[in-house]
Image (tube, rainbow, N blue to C red; front, side):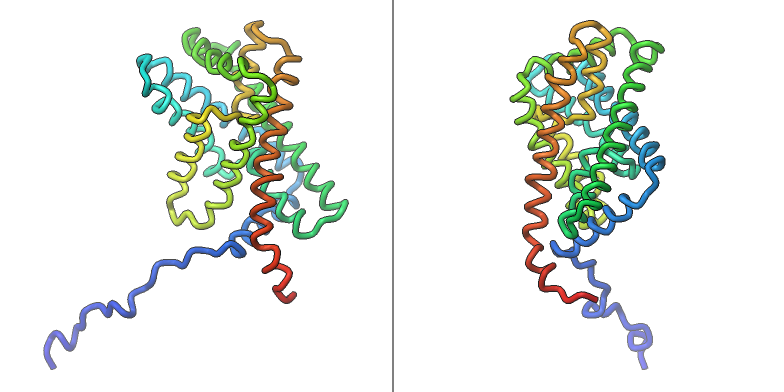
Length: 277
């Protein structure tokens, strides 16, 4: 027998095939199961995770502001500085922290699958805890930057300038711009099960689109709002009524009323036809 017979080359027909992408029903079940797991977590765990996410997400404003400050005033500046906005989302999503806009799909899919008053109460509880913790985290980060000297006066002015661009819009315009932002964050959550080690690029590109498209994210942009309140340029009423509420409603509409309903709608018939185990 020849040496070639003793050591046959690789059989291409039997090579390990690449993993088959999940279909829509499988993705739905993955996210639903993840949502169920999150809903069962103690509220204190959700709180600390949400607090960490609130602090971490402010790195989006920091990175985008510093890039804007360092780059020349040119037509392409916004396209480059918008990549800084992705930093906080990469940190939060890959770090598995609790960010409110992710929960507009993750914990809503279990509610759609098995609607009840108790399920609705659990979802509302999680939304309240996570959103509250996110905003407290953002507020603390803004205090660190403003009062503890973590950011220089030039950097603070760059962050505030980002906020001025946000707050020059009407509440209705902010609401409209928050809808696609909520939709895109929910899209990231839906795509991650099929990411196959491309999670970094999916998060980077989709959140870059939020910044470059001048969309509104209720948690991330709150950092700029708090800094403008500290400087006396806007009041609490403007922050809450002119930004927070419109952005919150828009993000919920985009992530829950639009994306989650569409995601559930495409698998609803298959779920109904699947025999119980």
